[in-house]
Length: 164
Length: 147
Figure 1 (cartoon, chains in turn cyan, yellow):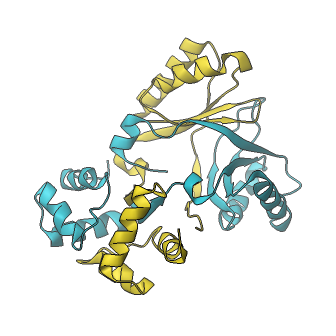
Figure 2 (cartoon, one colour):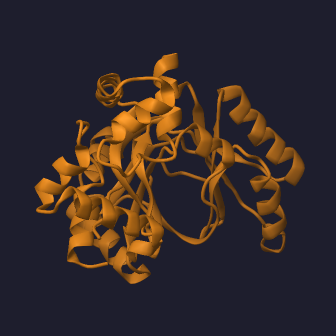
Figure 3 (cartoon, helix red, strand yellow):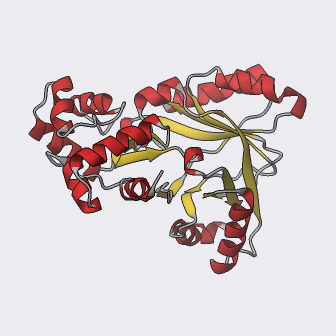
């Protein structure tokens, strides 16, 4: 656990969002018994340590017009995964990039990327261009479009932290 | 949404100032007043373009654990299995995808034991194999979208 009790209080108070007022950190502090300076110092520390990845607007993809998203998975030889992962992660079309274990024979893929677009055709074109440009077109890949979203967020997940 | 809204969404998906008057500082960078920025953020939230104005946390740093799980669910059982899976409060982001492995969901819990317990329960209740694919390395989690 990288978070102390005071920080946990602050994180809890911030979960629902930052108050949209002139001095939001002072208002946030009132909820947890901290003054504005303490809130600011603690939030800086949490950001520096990476507990808070970023602070700002959290957009709804669908409402912004991003109606297609594909999980693009790649079967990259183990000795190339790190370099390829870093390269794909640097591409503007790629929003997430993880290495995960293979589960053969059902699942040979190890590098998981996410590509968002306004529609399916745009996403498919972006993936094809990306594969050629980054020199990964020769590796087996699969493109899994999302067909339906059943659950955006679990109760516990929401309460704990809105991460990823 | 007009051009100013788009500029706000694009500029504020990260790097919001942690200062005494952050909205005033952010507004100045966008050529707006503090009141204008706050008013527009309220509207974007009310219209549902934004889900929140706040932090995006790294759940790993809370001592929490999560994984991505996948299942191959027969077509005729899809809704039934989805309902069983979604019963668990630890399950988030359940997506149907176009592949033999057609159900993909995230399990997030306080402990790794609990994550595994949920996967075992899902397997027992549905009688279907669950593939556990925890991330072994993160190359990027940047999710920013141009408005």
